[in-house]
Image (cartoon, rainbow, N blue to C red; front, side):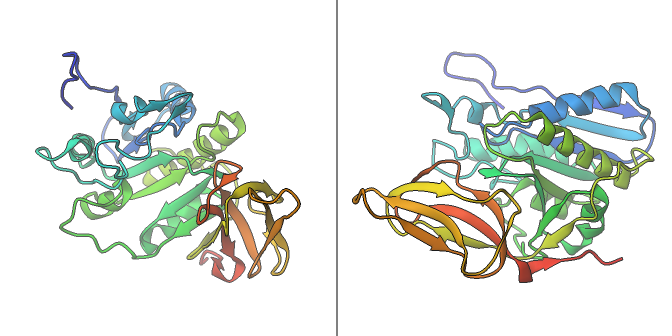
Length: 306
């Protein structure tokens, strides 16, 4: 991708597994510094070395070395480029002569387009795993993956001719079978049960693509087409009351905020509709307008067609 000011190369490691003719899948991770999906790649690598598969599978576990070098105290602040503040993932398919984010995206996408299908691994605030697809054609794959929930922003991306789309959306436009995003739980987290689950979901998607023969039984799953975000009405400290994917009825307390300007007062944030708790902001500290809780209204949940 270039050199650093000290003269060293900016590079990363890519692992290519091939076994004759067949489908090809590119599995990407580490676009955003701090989003730990590396253990999923370790499990996939071990599986590929022990089991027969068809075609070509490429693993890029830490695709963005620049984002992972953006450290602040003990945190990795790698969601956005510190050059212009833009999301590293919203730069595909990239530009070889553009700013650093576009060059990074171009480098990755040059490899991506040599494959039929793309699985892009991320993490999402505080959450449990879920799949994201932008096309209705991917719903059979989402069902086959066995993942509990898929966010289907169906046919919502009309971004042709731009360099401002996520990797999976760009794959939908340039790769034979398109691409999806798998959110592997919470940011900056090491949870082996979550990684094992995501590993099995990925394996099921590889079965769907024709690399392996046998599915791993997980879940019938559901998909949702919309969500609602609850923001903080004022500055304060947040107490969460529900586990992820818990059902909350309209009128129940979703979370409690303790305002920073009054030691005696508390503000109970009430659910406006029946919903599932999808994710929390990764902190108990809130400024006015912060996106504290994201929910899925139950009327936005759908069963897959048979």
